[in-house]
Amino acid sequence: MTDANHTLDPSQLPDAEALLLILADKLKPLLKANTALVGIHSGGVWLMQRLLVLLADQIKLHQIEHGALDVSFYRDDYAQRGLKAENRPSQITFDVENKHIILIDDVFYTGRTTRAAMNELFDYGRPASISLIALINRGGRELPIAPQIVAAALSLAASQHLQLTQLADGSLALELTPQHNSARP
Amino acid sequence: MNNPQLDTDGQLRHLLSIEGLPKKILNQILDTAESFVGVAEREVKKVPLLRGKTVCNLFFENSTRTRTTFEIAAKRLSADVISLNVSTSSQSKGETILDTVDNLIAMHADMFVVRHAQSGAAHLIAKHVPPHIHVINAGDGRHSHPTQGLLDVFTIRKYKPELHNLRVAIVGDVLHSRVARSEIHALTTLGVPEVRVIAPKTLLPAQVEKLGVHVYHDMDEGLKDVDVIMMLRLQNERMNGAMLPSSEEYFKTYGLTPERLALAKPDAIVMHPGPMNRGVEIDSTVADGKQSVILPQVTYGIAIRMAVMAILGGGTGAAL
Image (cartoon, rainbow over all chains, first blue to last red; front, side, top):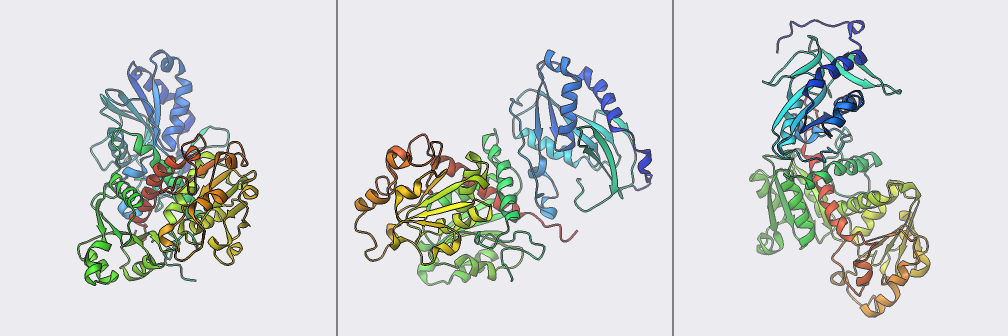
């Protein structure tokens, strides 16, 4: 992986709440009949919950269903790292068959989480299409997978770990920490 | 004290008994099982975690249900599974347990699920195998049956999530039951405040109170206001000598009838690890009744066994 990327100063981080509004605007034209939203735990699910409120009219109009995936059972680093102590049940209660699925993730990085999520989705049925939206693309893709829609793009050094957090009042914030061992791929 | 079940980082390495496992590990298994329950309801009832691994079921003692659920669990994790009914194979030709195990390791087995009539058999194998191989005790003698204990508390948690408010009664042949022992350890470790055992003196181990349970010899008294009734099987095959007058007599004193069930709380659940002796320890009306969760226990048993294998089979991050 190239490491010519910049080391970002935490003060230069964009505001997650502002990005959320941009993402909602960009997502709006994608919402049509026979579409479903699927958040990837944890950040993607928080985003989805906010988008469901922001886009409530379109969601209702097109009867858009939603679900959540925890990709722990499909990650490609299980043989090295094992299962995380905390994992949540995936909840896909609608029929995936022939649906247009929009996957929602907080930070797009290597593409490995997306791969795991796609593999899991196919175990529920054969969707008509899968697209990916993310709040932020931090750079560092390792697979031929990329988000269709992002609210912002950065190019972070591999030594930096960017993640979305949910504050006590429910609002979202981006957080930059030094890369640690349990980081998601 | 060196606990062979945990590695130096306190992670689960083998599952041999619930005794000695911290609450944190028990909760990790139960929470992971929660995620596996949904897998069985999907179009594809499989996840790829143990793809390329070989799980070896070593059953030195027969048990159709336990062996089948372990087999299904391993297959739903995408492992290759070999089930050996050892009582009918090499052992009868004189091979020792450890020689059998060594041969299977030479065939690149990654995990052993062991059932044996002798207490301590799984421990013996766990001590013997190299570090990358994991052992799960699927019942050893009168000692322990940890996945049964775990699936029982998982079932209780599903129906009665507030474990710290529960009164649980375990009824029957506690003396011969590895299930009872595992249940008691699981319940007390997870903070269930009142665990009762109800049995005749002849079917209770000496000093059973030391496990932290309340002892009742009178069933009506013991069932009063309990939230959960866990029946045990009368272990005919483990019974030597005259501990009981007859199974009819036993049913009269310790059988769970609708009248006795009415003494427990109205929303109490009834459990049984199977196989049931209808009309000996449990009345058919109760076994098939509204309060019975005996079949959900079987379903949840698969999720629990998947969780244990998935936790054991993954890397520890140690090499990173």
